Length: 139
Image (cartoon, rainbow, N blue to C red; front, side, top):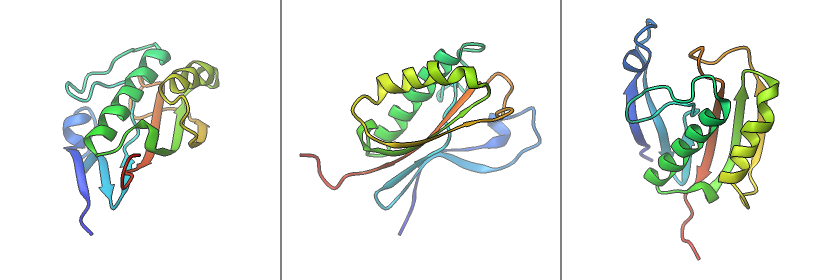
């Protein structure tokens, strides 16, 4: 089986301030499963951080990225089966989950929420990781 890599990139471009050189992708399609890289408050076109200091704005950007990447992969938000949410502060849980609730109304996915000490960049407050399927057909 061949995997399809969506939006490949190298970490030395994404994190020029760090001494990294890893080849990654924003999404990988393997069979009918779509694995997304954890999404944060970053515009995927410009690589600029958005919503600095505003967890709600960062969650909105992360969900917009997830929506876009799933569509590029042949899936959609309704096909999400698993989400993992990483927060840098427990107080961010309610605003982030409210954003996710608007984007994923009626999608009964499973989720795990974690509070971590930091993400890859200090300005990032939330990261959302999703796995979805590509249905054989839509009725």
